[in-house]
Image (cartoon, rainbow, N blue to C red):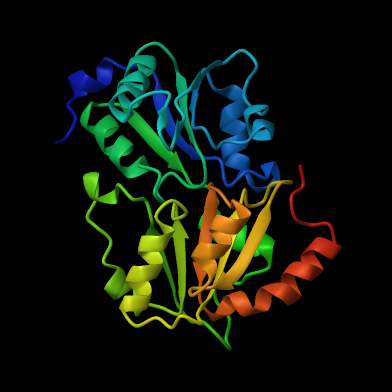
Length: 266
């Protein structure tokens, strides 16, 4: 639906859907940082790190709309309505999302609804955790000797409620590297689906928790052993999962990064 001029006239402001990146404040884009500094209202998610929240204009109204598994500050419909309401009275309204707004962040849905309502909106991309967390752990998602393709997929156990179910049989053979978001709680099912679809039990797998932050930690294993490793170590979300031969390089690159003190700068 194309917004009418009458709809546009109702709104004073513009909404910016900004990706905050995975946590390290050094990975925040300059454009996003500049908008935070002059924002009137910032509606932010749970995984936005404290150093990035500190970039927000001190006079801005700050609203926590964060969602974590089993705990929602605001429902999605309430968050969208809040953006619409604030755009009627404020010039710069920021919707601050962890990672990138368009990578499993519902940014596309929010932007569509805002446009339909006649609100001016702009997206500011962020660095997604599926790229940054493996990099900080020493795992290149592509490598000439191991991987020429990457698949990004959600492992959320409730995916079917708001998006098509994941076709794990197709995912198992789609590329050499698989990156899974929100896959910890559904890991036994994911591993069973991938291995029953033909992926070897010896396939390397890595999990990176709190990627790019000072508390970052990794768990390395194989599809055959990883579920037991998670249970024995108590490894928890939020974490990115990487599956494929590129994980075999992690002991070399990861050790070098840790030795140089690069991982987790705050």
